[in-house]
Image 1 (cartoon, rainbow, N blue to C red):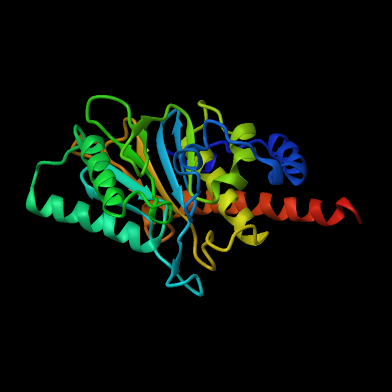
Image 2: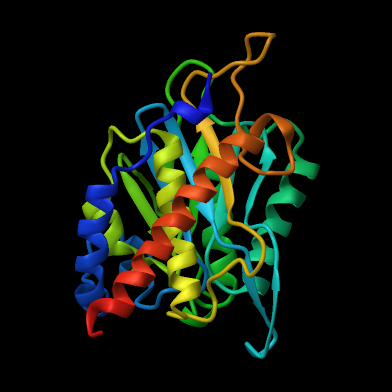
Length: 282
């Protein structure tokens, strides 16, 4: 596949939304993409976007994590695939997410082969519920998850799991974490089910840099790095005929060109948006 030829989001559509976002991002209302805020009454830190696309499912995450009392921070991965063909990411405090990951890794180690794509949503939901219950459902310890599954015999799926362990299949686009409130205007106006994974990845990349560059929230960003992008195709296979999922990163030769196409387009749109803002009252 010639990744350079994949059409990304039209410039005309993006410009229309850029102009609209200047006036509306302070008044975003909860819609179908705002599940986490409805579940907890409080949006946890981070930004992770998941999208069901025409050719598969894509997850895009920022990498900024807050340490101790928010006075220190680091940049780490937030998407993981410790279970075959199951990729997940979580919003919430760093300590709670590490605790949740620890529970998953412990379960996989002590129950080898027990968690698969067939039961992963149920198992992860139970672990999420037990972890949150341990802290008496205190909103300060709330977190939620996005899970992408790649079954061998059907299309990939996207599932939201609340901190209370309630799963919901997403047949569209969903964002979790505090960054969701700033992303809604773009997701509502730009996302559509006929998007390709590359287009959705560009949109997620743009949103993360938009939040960071405009300093909309201190807990979302990538600094000099780049967002995590994970593709879970419906029917992309290796030479052995097995389905594959993979990160889109500049560190791998096979995805480098594809990554830079997504990155360059997203950054170019952000720069154009910033110019428009400066000229608005110039």
